[in-house]
Length: 255
Image (cartoon, rainbow, N blue to C red; front, side):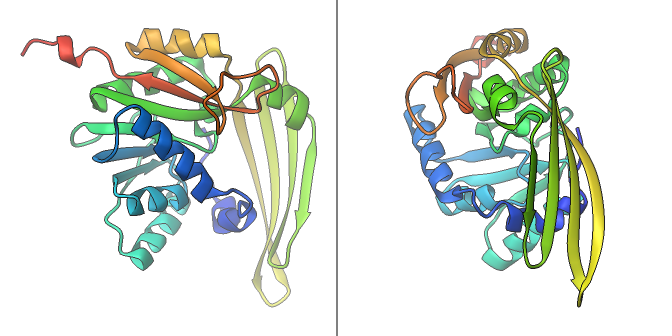
C-alpha cells in the first residue's frame, strides 16, 4: 500500500468532480437499510476527510483511519475549520486498533482496492469484524475487474489546471489483476515555479466470489453487493460496486 505524499496537497482539487454529498446520501441510505442510523462510524482510508466531515454533519460519531500523514494533516485542517468532533488515527488498515467497537465501518473511493494481497484483504476483514458491534455492518466500494480491463487499464489520463497538472498512466495486468498507476504531478509553489512529484500506486481488482470467500475466512457474513448508487445487483459492465458484510460471532460468545 502506498501513502499519498505529493498527491495529498492537490488531492481535493483534482478530485473535485466527485459528488461527495450524493455519495454520502447513498451511503447513509444503505446504513439505514441495515439499521445503523447513529452511533460510532469508522471510515477506513478516510484520506483528506471530505466524506468523513459530511457523515459527521449527518450525526455520526466519526473515526477516520488513514495511512498517509499528509492526507490526515489536511483532514485535521478541515476539522479545525468545521469544529466537528472527529477522531483521526494515522494507521495502516491492515493493523488498525480502536479503543472499542463501532456501529458500522465504511470504506469508499476504492480504498479496499489498495489491498493487493488476498491475505491482506482477509486480515482487514478480520479486524473490522473484531471492532464491529454485534450485528454491525461493513460497507465498502470497489472498482471492478471490468473497469480495470475495459475502462482505465492501459490508459493515460492527463489534465492541466492553473495551479497543478498531472499525468496518470495505467498499466493493468490481467493475470495478477493488479493495476499500476504511475502518477506525475506538477504543483505550483511560488510564482511560476512548479515542483514535480512522482508516485506509483497499485490496486487490485477483486471478483465477488473472492470477496465472499475472504468474508467467510474472516468470520464475517456476506450480505449482498450492489451496482454502485443503486439497490440493483452488479452487472457485467458495472464499474463500481458496493459490498455489505455483517459482523458475525460476538452474539455467540460466552464470557
